[in-house]
Image (cartoon, rainbow, N blue to C red; front, side, top):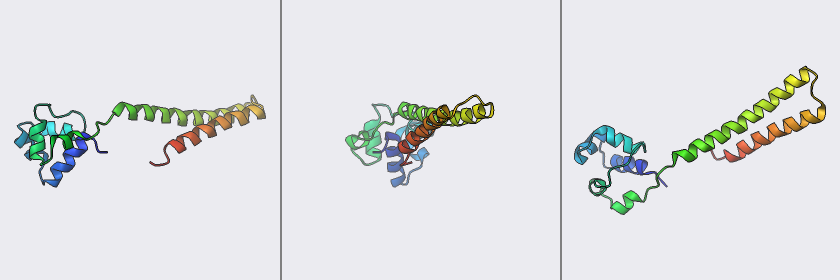
Length: 129
């Protein structure tokens, strides 16, 4: 499902309008239209009806779009970063501790296993990307 901004942008482009032309018809700035299309802001509730008319869609169709939740993407990015960091840290730790003769074979295998598990989880989570 498209975000509200993606919906506005695709409907505007289907009409062959620029952001400036849509802005003029809506009595807003082209910067406002740009923010709508990038999901940085949404049209004012009082202007939704006018926007729907200009884009030749119903208000319901325009509002059916899904609002993107950027906080979910940030959390996923942080989790992915942690998985990659743990995997790298485990590999580096095994190499350094083996060079210093401070690590037994059992601990090495456990640490490498943790690293491989983290990479596996990361890859499974991102297999569609």
